[in-house]
Length: 372
Image (tube, rainbow, N blue to C red; front, side):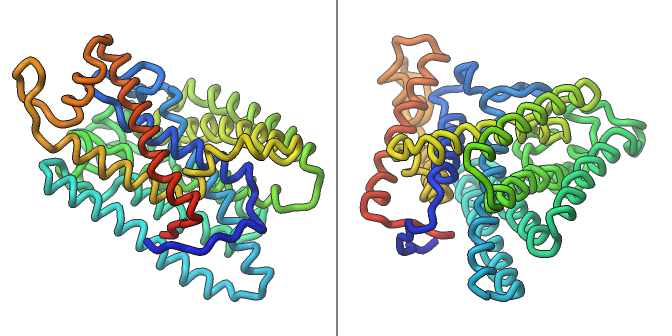
């Protein structure tokens, strides 16, 4: 990671603000104060889609929008596609490496080493979506998006598992979990599966491609209010299509099912349309400022939040009742012990989010933007 100079001349507030919202959501969802998270910010146990299940797809979506804006500018300046691809491979390798370093730190503190994880998925989605963007026209991007969703559905729904037959989309009997157990062994977040596993990366690239296609339309000529209204209408249609597909191919974040891609992608597209209307049509740019703190330093914000939260989880501490716990549980019990556990978990997460925001606000005010 290295600090970069500020260049606000070509920034799009709706993109930065939406990215900031996604990062804030990721920090909030991943930082409960105990093992009983508040229902609104808890992931669905398996099938289903909660608010918490939207935030990571929202981040991948806006990453796709952002890469179009960034690379179109460089292409118009005359930079060769080969040069951009070299940069993309290097950046992807760095982001993947950051994920591995994060996992090694957690492993050293007593956790599980995961070759795959959030940063690794971000790196692979960034690489895959950028290659499609640079190598195919707009129609090719649509074909790639459809092909990834249909191919993943075909494998998961119609290809028999060894010694089992057709999968049933349960944690154990599906191709994504089967391959992760076979190839990654014990290096999974959960014993039977990993939510950022190998096969499901294909469908997560499709989420980023939806952002790429949105970015192409955002960069095209046209009135901002027309774009915003179309984004919202088409987002609603995609969400409905995902919900209907979910009747046969369940909405599932852990498997990143094709229906889940359409459902969360539709929500992201509609929400981005609303942001675009707010900031580019109504020009309420000041409302974006709190979100820009995370939006201008997205990966640094998330990395630092994960590191400090992980350290709290692995540092032992004696709880107020004399039992053994960790620093996170001790802080939550001391500050919010009078609340029911879910409300205490939420209060801790909100305070932690605020502390992360205050830390990153120092970077934002000094115009220090860390590029990975």
